[in-house]
Every structure is written in C-alpha cells, then in structure tokens.
Image (tube, rainbow, N blue to C red; front, side, top):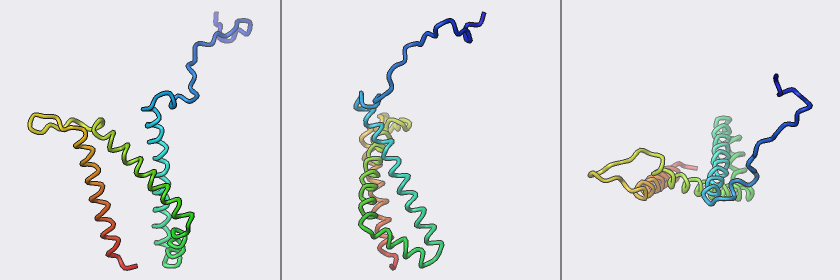
Length: 140
C-alpha cells in the first residue's frame, strides 16, 4: 500500500536544521561570505572596464564621454569602494593560495604557506607598478 498519497495519514517532518544566519555562527564562515561578496565588486569592475573598451571601439566622442563619466564624484567614490573590495578579495585569495595549490618541495622541505602568500603579493605589486608605468607612458 502506498502511503505517499494517503491524506488520512499525517506527514512526519524530519528534523530540519535552521539555515537562517548560518554564516554568522563561525568566524571562518564570515570570512568566506566576505570573500564571496567582494567577488561581486570584482565582477562589477570588470563590467566597468568592459564598457570602457566598448566605448573606445565606438570612437573618440564615446570614449571621451566615458572618461568624463569616470571623473565624476560618484564614479570616483564607486572606484574607491571597488578598490577596497578588490584588496579584500586579493587578500583572501592569497591567504587561500597555500591551502589550494599542490605542495612545493625545495631542498627536501615543504615551502611555507607564508612564502607562497608573500610571493603572490610581490608579483601582484610588481605587475601593478608595471601597469602604472605603462599607463604613464601613453599620451593622453
């Protein structure tokens, strides 16, 4: 006899763990959620840059309009918020990097996670300086 559709029998609900606010119960979950939220900022900035490339392809007038929009106080404020979001996201990324990549053995010893994290930051800083130097070479 199939009891699934028998309306006379009460349905027993199993225990359902409450999910509301699950991420607030543990500091590592809070860091995880912060990292996930900052990914939205990364995506938003990628969208801003994509629109800039599209406007550049549309011609000088469209490019100049986009540049003027980027110089407004609201845009500058948005860029500051996005910069903070990017820095938080990068920090969490570099903290996770040693846990997610394969072990690196040098001289019969495992490379410390802090070395991997510091190397990631150093490469990022170097790449950023190179991009700024290249940008300063482009005539405006």
